[in-house]
Image (cartoon, helix red, strand yellow):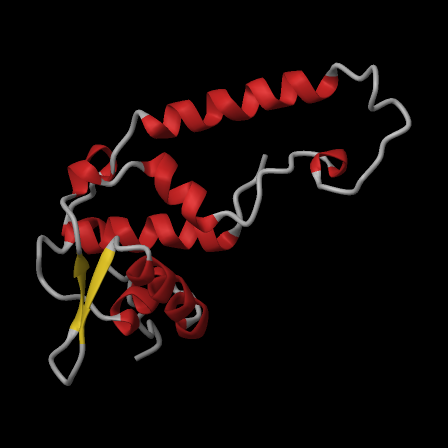
Length: 146
């Protein structure tokens, strides 16, 4: 199974925001720290704000912070909120009919594996993966020819 980039960024945004320790952070700050697109990051931040994980403060000195404590943000719930589906193989999607669907045992095994994956994430909170602010230092390349 592979998580979408959207879910990956959602977890990173939450980690960055938690590491800020309550200080408001900006999208530009996170985009620079992760070297990722500001536009894509904005979509992720909007989704996390709509789902209640982040709160946004508008204005010149605005930014983002966690809307709920990190020990109450369950990683499995974040993944469920950000992944479009959990169809591990094409026959899991609605309307798809496999020629061996009536006797196939693969679906049960994959359903069990997905449940185990989500169970691990359900046992972890944002607090359990918290980083320090210094872990997000942006490395600045210097011109060695000067």
